[in-house]
Image 1 (cartoon, one colour):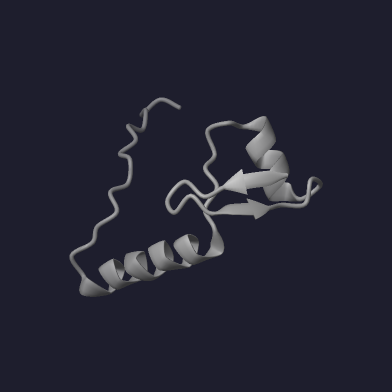
Image 2 (image 1 turned 30 degrees about the vertical axis):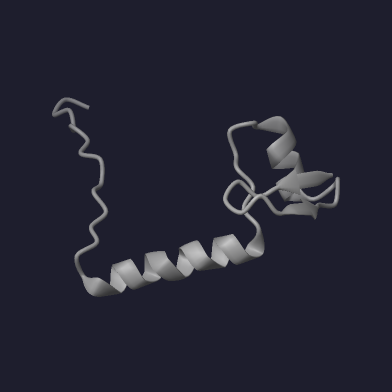
Length: 67
């Protein structure tokens, strides 16, 4: 299966029976990222976490009293 990276437009080949290829075929909303782009995004995200200004906001759930 040929796939195209959504960021750098590099075309790669995936094994048809691999988990990632099945995910891309069955769920069209998943994007493929090549290893270089994936690693670059991971490094930049980890650098943002290290600054201390990066916050992940968790969804507030209302707990019902009677359950």
